[in-house]
Amino acid sequence: MANLYLTEQNSILRKSGDRLIIEKDEEILLEVQCHKIEAVLIFGNVQFTTQVVHELFEHGIEMAIFTRTGRLIGQITSPSPKNIMLRIQQFKKYWDNDFRLAFSKAIVTGKLKNCQTLLRQFAYNHPQTDMKLQMVQIEEAILTLKTAHTTSQLNGIEGSAAKAYFDAFGKMILGDFIFSGRKKRPPPDPLNAMLSLSYTMIFNEIASLLDGIGFDPYLGYYHETDYGRASLAADLMEEFRAPVAERFVLYLVNNRIFKEDDFYANPKGGMYFNTEAMKRYFAEYERMIDREFIHPETKEASTLRKAFRIQAEKMAHVLQDDRAYIPFALDERG
Image (tube, rainbow, N blue to C red):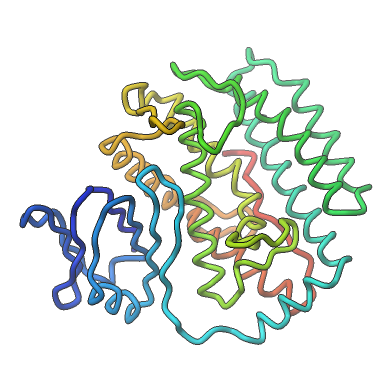
């Protein structure tokens, strides 16, 4: 099963039997059976019928709607029975400050250790690239995390470590693009555009998983609750930034899969993929997210998409069985 990405502007998504059909100007662009689809992701001006929504609900398939440039607008999900006992426990734990701090420390520590691993992997293959200072700064941040007493202190430590990490990230760019630091809302250059879109893809997958398992994705523990933000998805996404999004963008850039003319400057600000390049991006994303590897914890064959589910299910056990949360760890061997 895989995601269905719809980017062809002014096309229409309809159904016939148990098949989804994408049409434009009375021409069929694609037909696919519903049982082969994990989720439907719509970008920009793509129309769909209510019959399509009914069919997706029957198959338990989520639909996510994005702007043409990749900003998540919202999700359409089936009103299937939710795990109310899990949600009760989730809300109870929100008021447990000791739990919130311990969980937040695990999340940030896992994120920074994965950043370290990505830097070490690159340094092993490119010994001429000097990132020693940044690696020391991240290690110091990890040690300092242990002394933090509030999530706001954790946030400050993470912010300092992130600056060091992205200084090193810029040194890992071997292609033609220039990276002058992490910038967003809107992304001013192609590298930041690729990072932003990759983060959005991960965030959407994790938010959908959490909702499907029975969580309230909007109640998190490290990220403060904010209107319209799935804070729990933001929490669990942290540990996957380096091993998924940032490693993926390095692959795209250093293998010269994209070039400058694959992007355009929006008159309202920001740099984004053009339509054809975005289609290639999604093809590369699916190959990356479904590539098999041996999971470092389960020691079984897995994919990154399965790893998202493992962490979401682990979170349920953490809340219900009072276990400590163990983040996903990027394998040192790559």
